[in-house]
Length: 164
Image 1 (cartoon, rainbow, N blue to C red):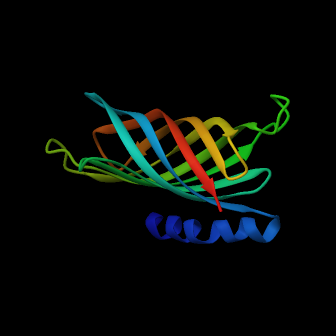
Image 2 (cartoon, rainbow, N blue to C red):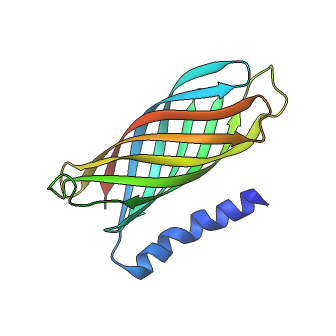
């Protein structure tokens, strides 16, 4: 049920943003340092992700596929609100806060349930390098459900997006 709801939301949200105001589609790539916290262990992963999204002046919707070798995979949706455009006195730096929802798989020979979902919050800064490229420096924290021995994940990312 959750997978069906998430898939529907993932497919419909970008077009809803486009209907309300001018939006800008983008693709991107990201590198992250992610900490997976379990009930008995904590693991540090370096991950890569591919991004697709749409952004207006006030909102950003981002879909990502994140992975680390064969052991960790995550498909997520992130909705962010640009909180204060004029905080740094320039439109080239924009802070944001948001929420995210993910479906994840974590392969480990010591656990039975290897698929679950996560939800949480994120925040960061967007740096506009040009009219078509931005750099995103962010942090996220997510609670994990459905994988018995895993409790949460958190980490920092650095992303590069191309607007088309």
